[in-house]
Every structure is written in structure tokens, then in C-alpha cells.
Image (cartoon, rainbow, N blue to C red):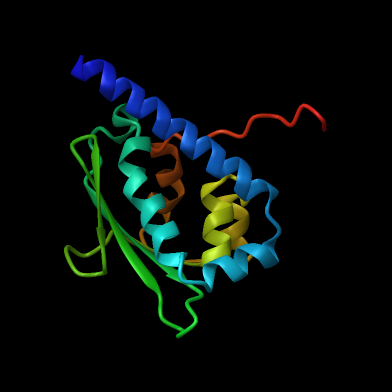
Length: 160
């Protein structure tokens, strides 16, 4: 019974991630920018980061032991929202803030670009070479990091 409940919860979480990804693909940048300057910014970012461990592919993450610091820019006060993603033993943990072990890589990105990146609308390499994401630390690890996670999917629009 408990396993069935866990399976249903995991499926619901995956569907929520897919729906969020679809919405992000459909939303214009101007609207996302207003959203990321509003009071719901924190809830949006926390919702995304707290879900990250569910999307880690344990097989691909085997042998990885690293902390990644995400600095999401674009707050109205000029500061960033910082999240640490620690990957070890095929699992991920997330913490708010920048304190802790020295990160292998620090990624700084604007809030709208972050939403585009996690939804698959913004290619990580294009973001880096286009100056939309700043990397400090092990750039090669940053390039491999996307492969450690299963990304939510966008279903094709039947009307397109």
C-alpha cells in the first residue's frame, strides 16, 4: 500500500514537472520577467530546486561527488537567490544559500534564463557562449551536469 502511494506521488510529481515545462515553453519572456520580479519568485525557485533530487539519474550520477552552487540573478534588490545542489552516492540534496563545501562549479544565471534552461528552451552551451550563464570553477563538470538529470518533457502540440 505504501509503495503504491509512493508510485502515485512520483507519477504526480513527474506530471507536474512536465506541465510546468510546457507552460514555460508557452510563456513570453516579458511575462516570465514580471513573474521573477514578483513575490512568487522564491516559491517558484524553491519548487524547482526541491524537485531536482527526484530528477537525478542515479546510474549516471554513480561516482560523482560534487557540490554545485546556483546563483539565480534578477532579484529586484540586485541580489541573487543561491541554491547548493550536492551530488554524492547517486543521490542529490538541495540547500538554500551559498555556505558549505566549496562548490566544484558556480553557475550564475538570470531568473528568466534559468527557467528557459530548466525547461529545455535554452541550450546550455548556447547560454554559456552567449553570455547568459557565467561559470566559475570546473567548466567541464558543468558541461556534464545536464546529463546527470532526467529533464521533464514537453509533449508535442497537436495543433502545431
